[in-house]
Image (cartoon, rainbow, N blue to C red; front, side):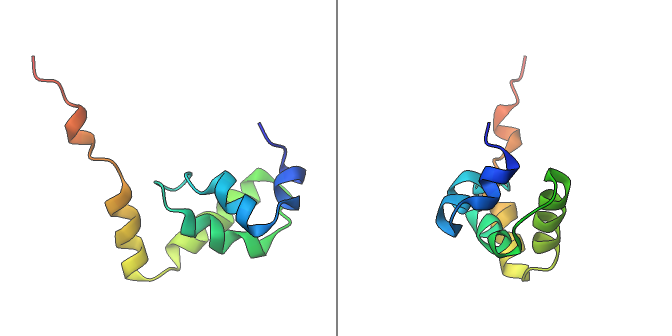
Length: 78
């Protein structure tokens, strides 16, 4: 597991690669988060990422929702 201090020190591309899958395979969230470094805590990092999603365009929010796997595909009928 990477330490927060190491994460803060990555270049933008590496940061996006490391965190790009956190929000449903939507690396744009991590990419938009990178300029706000350094983060003093994991909680601050998470808060920034959720604020970016909350304040993004409707189209990007729809893109995020569409990237979510269809959980109904996992239901097994007995």
